[in-house]
Amino acid sequence: MHKLRRHALLSALSAITVATLVATGCSNDSSSTADKARAAAVETPEAAAAEEQLAVVSAPTDGATPAAVADGNAVDQGKAKKSTLKVASYDRKTGRAVIAAPPARVTEPTADPSPSKSAATGPGSGSDAESDAESGSESGAAAEQGRDAERDSGPEKGAQRNSESGSASGSADDGPGSERDPASSSAPASAPAAGSHPVAVGDVIASAPAPGAPDGLLAKVTDIVGTTEDGSGTTVQTEPAELNSVLGESKADGAVPVDPSTMDIDPLVQGVKVSWAKTGDLTFGPQGAKLPLGSLRIDVGAAVETAAGAPASAAASVHGFVQLAPEVAFSYDGSGAGTGAAPGGAFLGLTGDWASKWSLKGRAAGTTDGKPVRVPFAELHADPVIQVGPVPIVVNLDLVCYFQVDADGRVTVDVEQDLKGDFRVGGNFTWAKGWTGVSESKMTGEPLKATVTATGKVKAALGAEATIGLYGTVGVTADLAPYLRAEADATAEGSANGTGSAKGAWALYGGVDLTGTLNIQLSIFGTPIFQKKIPLGALHEEWLLTKGEAATA
Image: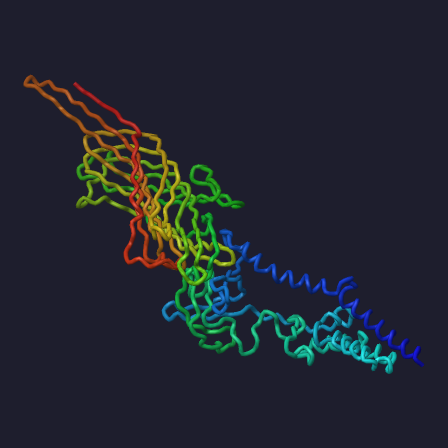
């Protein structure tokens, strides 16, 4: 009798051992899997730490509207994560927005009776029954039940409970500390639970351009108004937020080219022609000129007011083109920003290559009240989205191309210059100096034509005024004005017998003027607010192109 009981006990224990090996994948050490899982969980913060240096790249152009949300109740505040939420609408006047989750995905419940999955469903599944049977066997009850204990603790019960957990709620999975696979629930994984909202008070949302927010949106949720009437989203009250609330203590530094094909161009005078070049979609400039990839070229030819009394042959005009390849430069250093303090450093600006060729011909009229004549000939606007880690940052870029003439109405010229170089303008923030302007340009010019007659002076510029900001705010305004300047003077001598002589000298100069201001809206970085505009610092460079002398007797 004793041998029979011992045999029954061994049989029950053998069944339990088999089920345990199946659940652990036949591992020699049943704790190794759990140890690996715990190790992976511990390593997660290290992966986040590696992301402190965020990449600065162009946002995807697949038609999706990127968004990121920083949890206002998280321990690591100021650390945004990529989100599938969308800004369905926004009212700038009231600050109200409708936040919508993506369409729900209906997933059919599944039941897998395989022993491995039923045994691995965690506490409350078939493994619990096995543990109960094991403890019963050790107390001697299994010895009396014999094979009944083996049958009750078999994989069939685990499969049955796993099937029950695939319903709306499993009796075992509903217990405290249980974990339920969202895929096994009838509720969609991407949809919030009934009665909940996709965002909470304190959350910060960063979104690419959306309905009602053509400049993008960076806002903090201050109140949950409620679910919309059609149930498609949640209405929230917001207030403007700052970049340090989504970038936190991370660092980022990079320059992103502006796609010329995305620019809205509004010609302001007749004769303006626009051409651009983009990878995989080349467009050639006038007269067969081939543009470098990423470049935008604007050609203009327009009449300029001619000086009174000038002959028809001296009609004044300006002809030429501006070619540029702009890039948005962005950097952020969130050192010490984890508690909402200002970042350690920041930069926002515009850089790129510049090329222009233009000519001034004729006798331009004198300036009015000492002010040069300025004629804008094209306006350009773009809202490129740069991706700084998971955060979409919307840059607002405006360019106004113009020509400007400053003359005294006496000199007649036929001059032309070919100019090439680069530029860098923007605002730079450091704790030591606060916000300071950056204005740099290196350009060289070459005279293509130079004829100057009579005495006088004239200066003609073909330039661009740029405004760059974030999320609809104005941050930096810069005016880049390459120019041509010609001047001529003459002296005459005479005698009583009617003889005399005249001497004249003229010179043609090239140069560049760069001016601009920083605006209070740069506080969007989370830096201290300054109460006045800060000049970028004027840059003025000039070089001699050519000169000449003439003498008659």
